[in-house]
Structure formats: C-alpha cells, structure tokens
Length: 279
Image 1: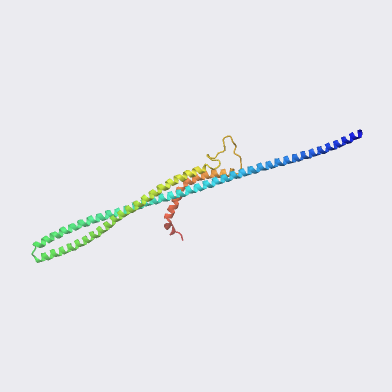
Image 2: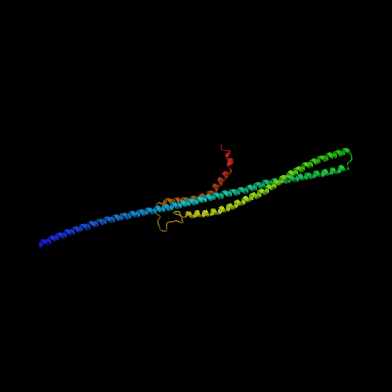
C-alpha cells in the first residue's frame, strides 16, 4: 500500500513538474510574443509618423508650387499692364506730337496764304489802275509804257495765283492729315484704354488669388500652429522658411515690376539707336 502511494506521488510530481515546465514555456513564449508585438507597434507608429511627415511635406511643397504659379501669373499680367500703359502713353504722345507739327504747318500755311492773297489784291488793284489809264491815254510812248507795266503785273498776278493754288493744296493736305491723325490715334487710344482697363481688372483678380495662395503656406496667417501648441521641427520647417522668403520676395518683386517692365519697353524702343553703337 505504501509502495503504491509512493509511486503515485512520484507520478503526480513528475506530471506536475512537466505541466509547470510547459506553463513556463508558454509564459516565455507569451512574453516573447508581447515583446515582438510592442516592437511591431513601435515600428508602425514610426512608419505612421514618417508617412504623416511626408504628407505634410508634400502638402507644403504643393502650396509653395501653387504660390509660385500664382506669383508668376501676377508678374506676367503686371508686365502686360505696364506694356499697354506704355503703348497708351506712346500713342497719346505720338498724337500730340503729330498734331502739334500739323497745326504748326497749318498756321504757317495760313499766314503764307494771307500774305499771298494780300499781295495778289495789291497787284490786281495796281493793274486795274493801269488798265483804266490805258483807256484814256493816246500818246504812243505812254501806251507802250503802260502796256509793258500791265504785262509785268499780269505775270506777277499769274505767279501769285499759282503760289496761292499750291499753298491751298498744301493746306488741304494738312487739314486732311489732322483729321486722319485725330481719328486714327483717337481710335487707337480708345482701344488701348479699353484693353488696359480689362488687364487691370484681371491683374486685381490675380493679385487677390496670389495673396490668398500665400495664406496656404506653413507659418502664414492662414496656416498657423494652434494657440498653445508648440510647432515641431520637421520636414516642413525648411518649407516654411521658403514660404517666408517667398512672401518677402513677392512684395519686393511687386514694387519692381513696373520699373522692370518699363525699362524693358524703353530698351525695346531704343534698340535701333543702341544697335548703331554695337560693332
């Protein structure tokens, strides 16, 4: 009986030891699995952080690209505005210069015509007096003298009449030129004025769009870190610096656009004068 009990005890102890070892084995495996799970969770968290950073970086880069595109559009429309302003100013200046020249010539011709007509009238009066004297003169020498004088006055009157005809032709041509310049240049000025108004309206819209696009950049009024939050250093930090630079450069470029475009326009207008000095 005692032997049986001892054998049973040994058997039970052996079985209990085996079960404990099995439990210890599974507990070890469990701890290993838990450690692996924690490592995987940490890895997943790291990957999520990387993905988030990349998304933020891509978003910021896209915002910079959009701002750059908007600023280029503004720069282009401002160049067009300045060019049309220069064309309009040039058209007004050309009209004024041409009209000044034509009106000066008109005044000169009117003075010459007045003088020629006065001279013509004077010679006609003198010739009329000689014609009247010739009718009452019978002495041959006097008739010959008067006839000679009449012939000279007739030739002078013919010459003056021809001169008047030419002056009137020139005056008519000048008057036509004044009308043509006025109508043509006025039409051009009206067309450029209308075009300029449209461009300025378009420029205002582009300016507004460009200003709005800047607000999408990191670190700007439209895209700030929430109050009380600390802005972490990350992939967008450099982009934010770029954004700040773009904002400052945009304002500076805006102030220089007109001068730049006008200088280009003047250079284009003066290229013929400049080319003669280039060997």
